[in-house]
Structures are given as C-alpha cells and as structure tokens.
Length: 420
Ligand SMILES: *Cc1c(COP(=O)(O)O)cnc(C)c1O
Image (cartoon, rainbow, N blue to C red; front, side):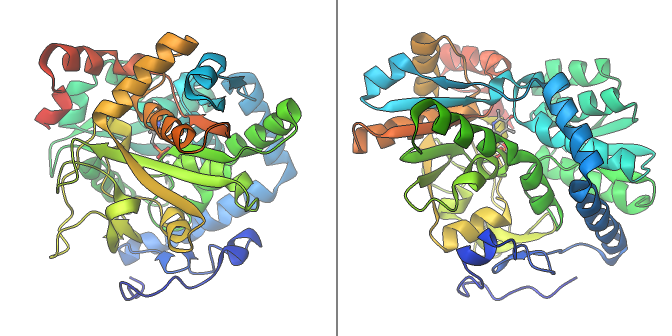
C-alpha cells in the first residue's frame, strides 16, 4: 500500500497541471487524491493494465477500431437536442447531450466497449465486472458479447432482486451473473467481490470497472473513454449556436458521465461547470449520497478521495431514489476539481429529481433516467438564478429502467430501494 496523504491538506497541483496532461502524476494522483490503495498482490495487475491501456489509447489502429465500434455499434455521435419547450418554460437556452440514445441506453457503454477492446488486446481470457442497478453489468455483458469474451458480473443479492430485468438482460447477453450475499449485499459488496476474484487470477482476468473510481489507472482510463461526450457536445454546440454554453450540468455518482462531459470545457474559464449529486431524502447521515459536496477525505475501493464516513472512518449508508447515484464515494478527479474550485458540486433531492423527470417527459417527449433527472433539476435551478443563459445538460441515460420505481413512489410514497 502506498502512504495515505494527510487529511485536510491543501490540494497539491493545480488546474494547469491537469490541463497540461501532468495529472494524474506517476503515482496516479490528482493533487492529493487518487493513488493505489490495494493489496500488494494486485499491484502487478494494475501496473500491467496501466501500460496496456496507455499503449492501446496511443495506438492509431486501436483508436480506429474504437471509433468504428462507437459509430457502428453504439450509434455515436449521439445527438445534441435543443430542448425547445423546456427553454421556454425556464427562460433559458437549454441543450441536452443525448447519451440516452447510445446503445444499451446510457453513457456506460462508451467505457465498457473501450475497456473490452483493451482486455482483448491484452490477451485476457475472461472479463469480470461489478454492477449496482445493473446498467454497467448490461453494458459490460453487451460489449463482451460483441467481442466474444466470456463475462462474469458480480451483483449484490439485494440489487439482483430489485433489478430482475437487468439480470435477464445480462444472461441473455451471455454473461454469468454472480449474486453477492456478503456485506451490504449491494454495489459496495459487489466491488469487494470483484476485486477478490481479480486477486485470485490477475494474469488472465480483466476487471472492467464501471465508473471513474477505484485505484489508478481506472479513474484516468474511464475518463479517457468518456471524454467523447464532451468533445462531441462542445463541437456540436459551437456549430449549432456559434458559442460556448454559460454552464454545463451533469449528475455525479462515481463521476464518469460528468467527467466525460466536463473535460472538454475545463480550459474554458467562462463556462460554469456544475456537478449534481443525490440529495436523497434529506441532509442527515444515511439520507443522501452527496459525496463531493458533503464528504471528507478517506480511502474506499483502492482510491483516496472524498467519501461519506462517520468520525471513526466507517463508510456511511447512502440513499437516493436513483440507484446509479447511490454510492458513498466519488472519483478522485472530482475531489481535485472541487478542491481547486473549477467545478461546483451541489445536490438535488429525490422529489425535485422526480419532478424534473416528469417535466422533461411531458415537455420534450424524452423520459430521462432518474440519475439524469438530477442534472435536469440542477439545470432548472441555474436557469432560475441566471435567466437567459445557455445551459448544456448531460442526459446520461434513458428512464425506461425506472418505471417500476416511479410506480412504487406513486403508490406508496417510497421506493423498494428504501428496503435495502
Ligand atoms: C450509472 C449511471 C450514472 C452514474 O454513474 P457516473 O459514473 O457518475 O456517470 C448516471 N446516469 C446513468 C443513466 C447511469 O446509468
């Protein structure tokens, strides 16, 4: 294990370092955050992955293959839609980057196909992945099917019970789903179990991690594979409107869709970048998952970052109506961007997110994922604060998967996820 940096120390490194490509540094740090806090037995596998991934991403032949998969199989570039009726209602110029139209219904596929290609290139014989609500599991299973790689997905028993259709999808796509009965029996336990599997066979197994979290090189690698969102959106908006947006808003769970859309705008100081976390049902412990806005430094799943913990360092339970945002950690690059003040992080509660989902569906004919609805609600708040501004919202995924949750809410006022 590498040494744990002192909590509360000011961020080492600047935004200029990040923009100049000097970050993550050779220890995998974004300023004070990031690194590799894993058992010694995993260090060689992470070093091998770092080398394999850097070589792949720098290889024009690999980029050509990735580009072809993004275009022909995922359907990129995804559209940039001007939300005409929301713009009128909010007195703003609102644009939606439509990751809901990417194959399998969310941005997660960008990362899954990229890493599956890297796994094949590195000669992996099998791929493993973790999943919470099942979205990353489905994306991984689809990407592995596409490339002919055997895939095993770890999923908590609680999640598997409340997300049956995603278990069916993964199995149809040829993946083996392993239900995890240990720990909290949700995403946290699934990640622990996937890491355990990887430790037992790091040579021939590739671990396909689903967000910009975990030990180095994952936060960097996942970001590199998701920056296509922001590159397309920035170019598309310049073409359509001739100008940059006043603000870019995205939801933050582990942080992959947000870092993916923010990155292209980090060097545009006039563009306000806003990350929206899950405010859940309240500000008390266990009621939300607002990690970057309310967390403190600590180590979770191999990385030093902000995290929701009690004063003894025990990771807190979290709550959100949206499973994809219900995670007590956040990627180290977000912790760094919060520390240097380049991105603002704030939270939107369950009720406000559901209301934004319903408003978008009725006004635009688009049912967003509950996760994405948090970003929409954040966009609406921004519009109220600065009328007439141009706001780009990252619509990370589609909401079909959330119909059951919305139904529960309407009938009982609570979701089955509360039972977890
Ligand atoms: C998983 C998911 C998220 C949250 O993950 P990030 O890594 O924070 O992007 C957001 N939106 C959708 C639709 C998701 O499936």
